[in-house]
Length: 459
Image (cartoon, rainbow, N blue to C red; front, top):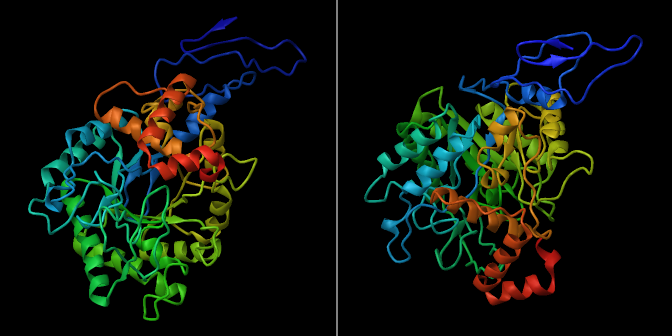
């Protein structure tokens, strides 16, 4: 047995192929520096961490993330909200600041905030953060506090900007606006009103509001923005033939349907006028519904976004793996779009749970950035532990295969982190049972009936 300052190893017996999987590298702190020796290989956990710890530089802005991880956007719902007075909505709270300070301590390379709305009366949900030029106060100091907290340990921070379009509860907005007048079907007991198609002036107003919000975040100290053009929200509604039946220059061909998104990007650049400000776009791979967005159209969209100088984040709401072998849901689409990207960095979100799958996605060239979301509500320091080789897999849970429950559970954990409380462990059957019982009491009767009679309906 030979001793080294950082680890111990054994010489192999003559003529034997030798690799001792039990050897552990007791390096006092990360990053690991593998020692090259002809008879020893580092444990796989070490090689995964070495891959995932590498920085990522974005060519258009020149910004560099300290590692390959990105905390994907999730709706936090920790800002102020008033049912009757829209001017009292959207102010970031100390709970929101605490949430991002906690995630920053987890050593994530890029932190993306969730669903900052550009209009005070058009919200994804109550409690959304809002940047609206019509609010009596701009909350700049509050957003500066969020940016400072999120950047406190070297992460890049992007503010996700969004408009729900027709996808807003009738209790929040009975007069929604969209690309066309196609009503969103009621979902999970939530009712939606028939939207009014945006006029040309209305579209111009949307463009200016997105640009105003981007400039506001720049002044607050954010490193960039992520434009939300997925998940059925307004920009997705313009991109999709299913929800866009316009006959003017914003409807019909894909080129026309992309026009609003590209005009927003151009206006943001004019307003911010800082080439180091990172502009990224979140798009869906495909909707898997008739007349929805399909993969070929998304590839064309991604190519157009690169031409405008944007990074793309691939995501999709439907949680159905594209492959039974590869862990991430959308790696297949990323492989298809990669040959069309000359400079843009690709971020894939959805399904990543193990460092093995994450490292393989990076090494194979499928993606440049690993996006994870819900695992970080259960374990805010998961990235740090993975980079140190302490963990190789995200924590599991004991929920039945109903995504609604997992989304609600993550929202509960987000609130717990923001309030400085212990995080509920949903790997405990007892905690899961108690949570489901509480959910069934709080959900509308129609939703409770759906869950009771058809659990697979929400998979």
